[in-house]
Image (cartoon, rainbow, N blue to C red; front, side):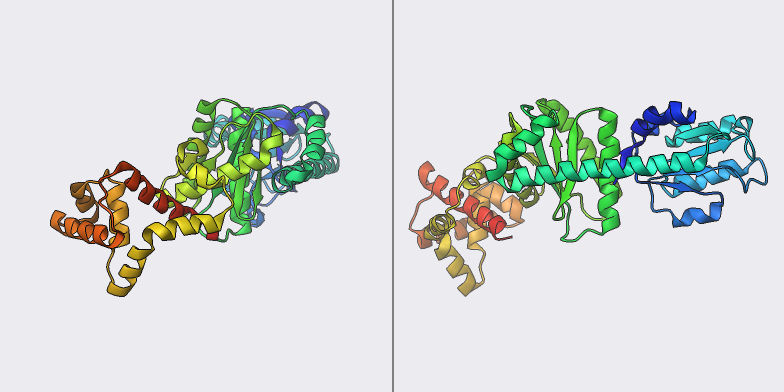
Length: 390
């Protein structure tokens, strides 16, 4: 549950006579709760992304507010509203306090003493609740459209009511390394993503689905998509102690009717990105894998693979050799003995001996381009079968 601070400020500044003093660049942040706090010692209970309201009741000296702000920033609060007029005066907000907020992009507001704290807090709680309802509703609509394509027409009516029908999009899947994510980490990634995307002022939808972060970018511009994903991946690498997530994006889709197709393509691209050790691939960049992800005939693919390469797997298992791996490296390095030797840190003569043995076992010459393609396709199929089994 969150709402963009900028939206909340613009909608209620007139009602509660809010003034933005500093930290305007942080208005893109998402706030998750509103908390009244007077004692710096209580800041340790914050979970992050709260909007804090204080009267300064505990202010004992001029340095109190700056220390209070510093602690809120350390605890990743979303912003601070100072209820001025009794314990803290507007004049107490000095230039160095404003400079701190500007540097940290931490929004600092003032609100006159005459405003009742109960009124603004109740209002903000209600707005957060409504925002949560809208977000949950939209997320469930997205999940239905992606995972229950038989309900496409029904979903399309809802998308039309929301002004989303007929818009081109890219769908993106992020797969964090590891199988489990702590709830706090998931929330941090989601809120940080929203804050970044809010600054771009591009329409988007983002949510978690079974340990995968799904992003819908409502744009037809490939350049914009690339810029966004590069920056998001850089953000995730800073936030996560573990390896950066693999990322896959769909080809450009022209209408939300093809959300299921977009999700399938993005998932395929993410899987190939992880397999190849790359941070990000688009579906248009995964080459022959696109054909494999378009079929559901697993038994046919397995037969195609085994008919070409099972002899090598059997020989390797019996003799503790690596002929299967050697053939793959040889073929995917332009059938060059020298290149394969370099990649494996092996002498060229050793690779040559292995290739000779491979030709004998498979009854081939590896001189014909069609023959080499069929073996390469078998290795592509092996990758796909491994992904499909996960």
